[in-house]
Structure formats: C-alpha cells, structure tokens
Length: 132
Image 1: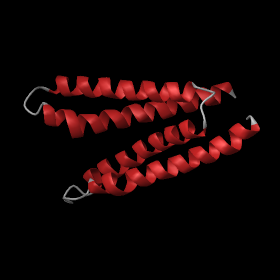
Image 2 (image 1 turned 30 degrees about the horizontal axis):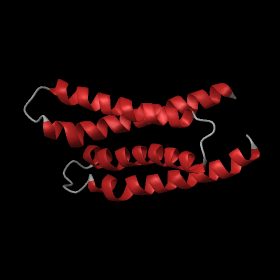
Image 3 (image 1 turned 135 degrees about the vertical axis):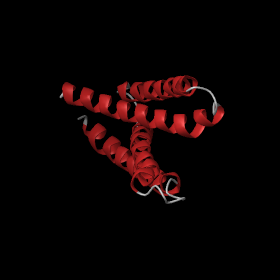
Image 4 (image 1 turned 45 degrees about the vertical axis):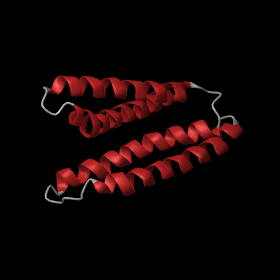
C-alpha cells in the first residue's frame, strides 16, 4: 500500500509542477521578459513550479492534515490539470479560435478545482474517518 501512496503523491506533485510551470511561464514570465532569451523566463517559471510542487508534496505528506487540506490539495491538482487541458487544448486543436484559451480560464479550471475539492472532501470524510 505504501508504494501506491508514493506513486500517487509523485503523480500529483508532477502534475502540479507541470501545470504551474506552464501557467507561470506562458502567462507571467514571458510577458515580463519579452525580448530576452528564454532562460530568464524558464528559470523563473521553474522556481515557481518547484515551490508549488514542494508545497503540494508537503501537504500530501502530512498524515494529520484535515479534511480541508485534503480537499484543497485535490482541488489544486485537478484544477491545474483541467486548466491546462482547457487552456492549451484549443491552442493545439483549433489554432484559429481567438477565444480558445478562455475555456481553461473560465470553465475547465474552476470546474476542475470544484470537482477536485468535492472529491477530496469525500475522500477525507470517508477514508480518513475509517482509518484507511
């Protein structure tokens, strides 16, 4: 059972790292360093993603965490995945659509966060109450 938990933690942390890197790189740091080479934006985005992944890893590591911690962690992980799918998906599949990335910002990101928070709270109430 410990290996399954470790793999799940690594998977969630990796997804959060990738989502935070892509979000901070494309939406923030490329705008700050528009004419520089790619390394300042990539370095700043890597540092931001590393901090986000570390916070998620520590949150997942805490066994004494409450239901709110579990719900917010699940919400952040699923929200990041849904946001990336809704934001970058229209760019890949319909490059001519001028409002494609708004799908991730206004629809799939918040819905993914809400679904993850609901799933995390159900997990927190059901499984942690039973001691599983």
